[in-house]
Amino acid sequence: MRIVLLGAPGSGKGTQAKRLQADRGWPQVSTGDLLRDAANAGTAMGLRARAAMNAGELVADEVVLGIIKDRLGFDDAGCGYVLDGFPRNLAQAEALDGVLAELGQTLDAAVLMDVPHELLMKRLTGRRTCSKTGRLLNIHFSPPEEIQACIDAGGELLQRDDDREETIHNRLEVYQRQTEPLIEYYRGRNLLSVVGADGSIDEVYAGLVDALDGLEIAGHAFP
Image 1 (cartoon, rainbow, N blue to C red):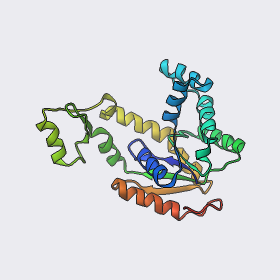
Image 2 (cartoon, rainbow, N blue to C red):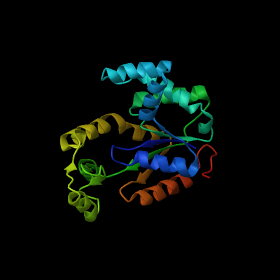
Image 3 (spheres, rainbow, N blue to C red):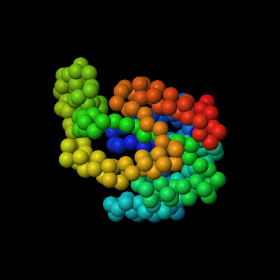
Image 4 (cartoon, rainbow, N blue to C red):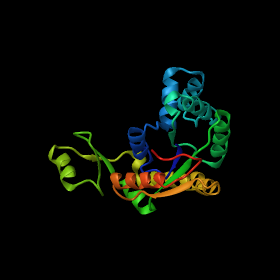
């Protein structure tokens, strides 16, 4: 099954994509990972990506699409894959359709990981790192004993600059402006499925599997 995972920052797309990969064998195709791997491998597209990233610029869509096209041609993607982090806007979605047509492939589903805005803010702005142990914590959701263990070890709860409230607001505004229109784009093609992603990781995964289980798309049956 070929899937696009949609959702705002903090919705858990990457976590759930990894679980699908482990359970179903559908590789998680993350654009960030692909760009880094291609740059490290020194491929033609990777060198173009590295030049852009080193200059602090966005990597051109044609480069990203070229790298994705190469990845979707790998043997392990033959039974399906999960696109995580791409497309990010309508232009990329339309370009992806063209790439898939060249490969003789079609998407089976676009799954929206739906989380209320207030919860996203708590997930993202609440993230902290223990300065002593390096453990990742959340001041809103981590058990009190885990936070206390950091303090007892002599650590401080440090917040990254890109997890501060103003930065998170900006990231979510970009998502709403650029990526949310994909919801209607895929709904209009009868590919959209919505999964409530405000529960625990296990609860969200169960909902995701149930949603995919219930889809009868392009003759594919969920294994």
